[in-house]
Image (cartoon, rainbow, N blue to C red; front, side, top):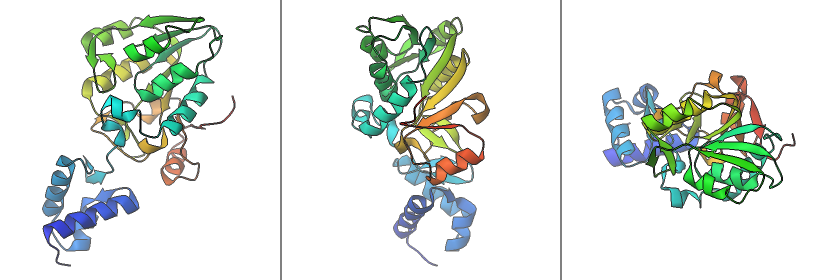
Length: 257
C-alpha cells in the first residue's frame, strides 16, 4: 500500500481513534513500510499534540493536559459524579490527603459541611474552597506552584509531605491506561503525587471518563500501589474491563458506600 505522508498520518490517527493504540511494528507491516517511517510519523504527530508516544507505538493523548481554566469545561458532569463518590469515602473523624486539579476541587466542594475531618492538601484552590467548611481542619502543604494544576510540588513540598499521614488519599491523574498505567504531564507533579500517596493507608485515583484510555509522559504509580480507581466511565468500557482483568478495583461513580 503506497501512501503519501499526509495520507499515512491520517491513517494512523484513524487507527488510534478506532483501536485506542498504535503498534509501530503492526502499522509498518500493514502499510508495507519501515518501522522507522512509522516512528517518524508518530514523533511528528506527538509534536502536534495528536498522540502520546510510548515504547513500541503510541496512545491517545489526554485532553486533561490543557490549562487549568480550560479544564474546568472538560466533562464537568463526569467530574462531579466522580467527586461525589470520592467524598462518600471520607469517614467522620478521618484524615484525607486531597491532591489538586479540577476533580479534586469538585471533591472539596462535595464534602458535607457537617463532616468533621482533617484535610491535607497541596492545592491553594482546594484549600480556598474549604475555608468556609466549618467542620474541617485544614493543612496546606507549600512549595513551588505548578500552575497547570494549581498545586505545590518540588523538593520542599515533597519533604513536607513526608511528615504527614492520613487514612485516605485522593489523587488526580491525566491518563489512565492498562499498559501505560497512571500518568501525568509533569515530572515534579508526578513525584509529588507519589509522595502524598505514600502517606495514606488507602489511595484512590480520581479519573473522569475523558482520562480513561489515554496517556501522558510521566508515570505516577504502578497499579499495585493504589487501592482503586473512581470513574464515571461505563463498566462495559473496553479499558475498564481490561483494568478489572488486572485486578484493579473500580469504583463506579454513583455507587453508594
